Image (cartoon, rainbow, N blue to C red; front, top):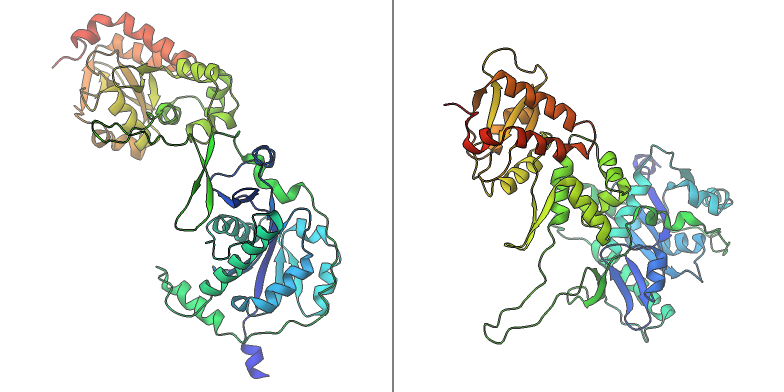
Length: 461
């Protein structure tokens, strides 16, 4: 009795979802997907969805997964009973089974039936992200399950059955004793303490196959996915599975003269746009609207999760002042711009592009007489052969103090005529009003002071 009182409260997280990393293909069997796709896009490619069920020990990377077809879903009670009976890493039924509200609503009598076998069902509230985190981790890890069991045929039912055996063997291997190579010693100790707990045998009463109600919540993860893209199949020798990779299939054509593999050229427009958006005076939502995009499509594009059609790409290029340089075969920020120093990495990258790797003498400009702007410091990019770009750096911010390190060949503070300084301040103010005004106002500024910036006459020694 005393030993039982000292036992910790055991808690499992239970979750159900359409697998976002695993599908079935009539020819390739189970296919792993590195970048998730919408179910309609998967169906268009001949891929069938699979239901993922999982139990995770709260706070530990010990989980047991199983799967079913969408047409023949497993009873939640069947899943629980099987996991608690066969997955040794779970150590049998817990004291608390935590689920999200959708699972609880899908099987309303589950809580009462669990209570009869000594398990309390708790529904995670909106602020409790633990069950969601366990599900997210299970979704990610499921795509990397090694293929240990070859199905008798590539049919949906046989492939899913083999996948279940693969998942169970993966659980046994990960829950086994021995060094795990984790960098967190405390976590290692917690795992060992859990596995030292006595095994509980599940009581009867949950074997009844009660139907549960499916719904859109099973695939809620697809709501935030970008539009589908080009994909290609490729076998992975490590996991033994067929993968569906994103992008165009790499060319393996070989030039007989030099025996060098040729590849498609890299599209750096998303990277350039991402850095400019990070430094643009206006928020991304306004930038997207000006280019005729939604904020989500802009974010998908600059994070290289989705492409844009030709007209949308051109509209974004024009608004952000990006041009294609045929000499080097890539995009470049042509400007001229008014930028705001927010993110050090983005600002440094844009400066490197504009200056051609540092071929400039950036400096902070101040009025030769009179007071400087109390809120902003103004830094000039006077790259050789290009119109000037101005950077507004907020006074007192850490990134402003880092500018000498971020901008190669930084020349410090240079005084300019008060009239020119006033024009810099007013130009920046007008350029910040709306996204489309940026390059237009700076181009007009460059034309007004063409002699000064080409001859560097406005930067006296």
